[in-house]
Image (cartoon, rainbow over all chains, first blue to last red; front, side, top):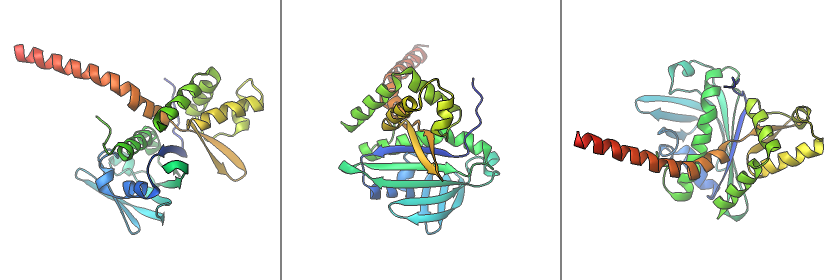
Length: 145
Length: 109
């Protein structure tokens, strides 16, 4: 096993056959997020991003909102008490239309210096979330399992 | 099919030991410049650039500009998509077969 220091800046992207508006809805409305975001019900309203998983509820600050192109918000891992105690980090969603009905979605999770446990935890998570989001938008169905 | 074309690019990008080595280097620590990556490989700058371009084209490497520097990040999402598309499909069947066996054994017990 290689021991890794989780990255304090992480960048992920995926090309999705969907419009920027569809992607914007999918990342800001709980009816979509609960199908691919580990079951989390996430709603962006005004300057807050509300999250809920089961009984757990928390919210993060929206730092920038430019629908359907860019969303920047704080990130506290409210799903785990150890990680929730760490400093807030930042998540940037960039949505760019490409040719042929394809949209490029980039997620940058940075400012993770004060949140080492979160940095390690989200590294695998984003991959799963973006893969699930692509499947949901392209097939209308969530990933199996 | 967009999906199949994407898969082709990922498989082709992975079918080269130098490119897999580059991905391993980025897995250990990403957000690196071309100069940093080049210093770890016995290869010309042009050679490393060429391989990085193939990886970027397949979506396995994403670049971001930070000031004057261009940083390279590992993007594992295409590998996850291949996993979902190919691995799950075959393992699901086996898991289902085991579940059936368990059910049958418990029924007859």
